[in-house]
Length: 280
Image (tube, rainbow, N blue to C red; front, side, top):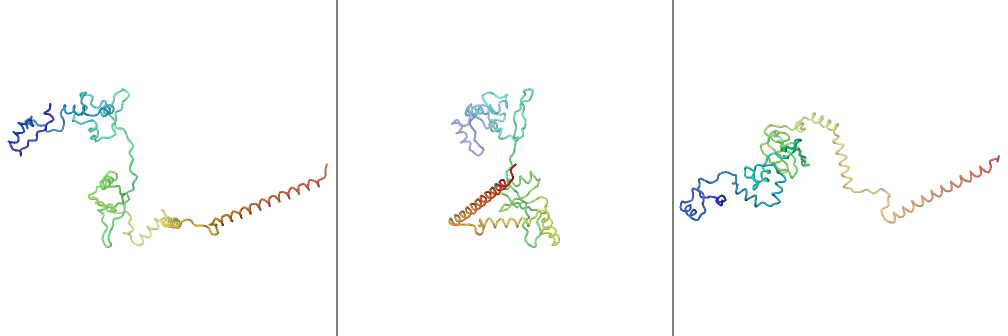
């Protein structure tokens, strides 16, 4: 079966002398008409590949797909197409296929649902850059993307989630996408009159408090940039801190002494009242 592993490379461009010379040396054992023109490998090659496969890999394949191809010979684990189980599983378009045993004990393939974790990214639609005096181009859309996102990811995202067909993609600090159908940016204040723009700004301020949030953000940024603010009169040096602690201790001791005097005075008054009371 050695001739199964030899390839005939005698093309029409080679001379007859070279072909005859190679036949004399035993390099061509098959006639060109009997060359294999299909992708499947012969059974002997499949058996040889299985034999050369590590034992741990073969055991794993048998454990994962024990009844995948029960009609195949024992010496080969190749599929009818000549692929290994791992390669056949990689080329399978349907993912999440598992063997599930029903109540009758019969194993059958079933598509089992799996959790899919989407990336935590933000894709922001912004208004197209329109130079002064030129009309808005509705056949383009501009997006702000994270640096890890590619053109293919953006095209797949727009097609799968929103069904938007795109024609071209340009990325430089922002992604400009060509659209098949026109799209106008909704409620663009650049295209409104002065009265409509004022009404729009009032509506946004009434519902979202944009100016108030901007003012609070500015105050917070100033506070963070300025750093911690010390209170006026607060001690800063070690001597001032010790002096401040001594003053607070003296005030506390005076308050305790005053409370003690008041309690003694009240007890004396109670004793005098008890002594002045007539005895029965």
